[in-house]
Length: 245
Image 1 (cartoon, rainbow, N blue to C red):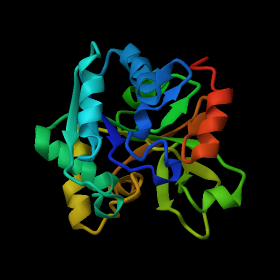
Image 2 (image 1 turned 180 degrees about the vertical axis):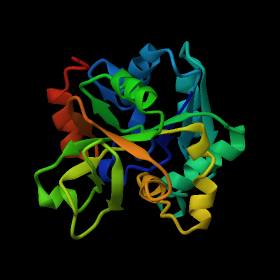
Image 3 (image 1 turned 60 degrees about the horizontal axis):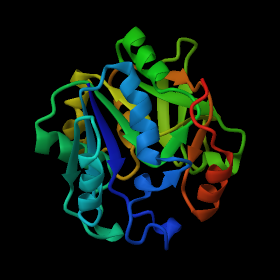
Image 4 (image 1 turned 45 degrees about the horizontal axis):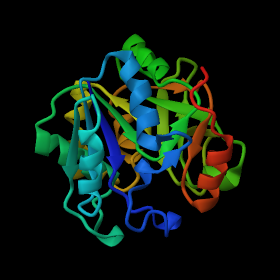
């Protein structure tokens, strides 16, 4: 399995911290955001390569970081240099697939979140289901719901619909940016883009995929800390205690 890490954004809401430095390498406690993620995922023994998809501005910083690690980490530069010219998450995934000739199952994650539970539980869930999978959590706030990917599920965790940033969310189940694509489904991303799939929000491909094949949604086993602005970064610095379950 390959683990693709979406890290090509410019994090403008975190300026000046991220004006010349990538958000995924900001420290939370004693480790960077990325180190929290990959150190945990690596415990599953399922991932043979981590692929960090970066923009051109920060690729060299990720490469210097990767050189110090004992895991196979490949940094892919998507060639963009500004927030206005970014490819968008789904096109970045396809860019990395084409660049590295990836043809395998893929764990695709955002590089700017930390979790207080182990993603190995999600990996186990994907093996149990044998389909592409996502996670879901219950969001009470309508203000937050309209900014998220929202899923509708049946009694067997099967995703029957997903919308990104809908003004009228169908449910309170939100989908965080952690996805598993089977090898077969990872081959369909180009088809989805050609079919008009949204490309900026990472969940857009799942919204297309769940209408074309089976996708299951695991209820999240703990909490997610999304680092979107200076206030949320300060909050996670104070509250995050690492993976505890």
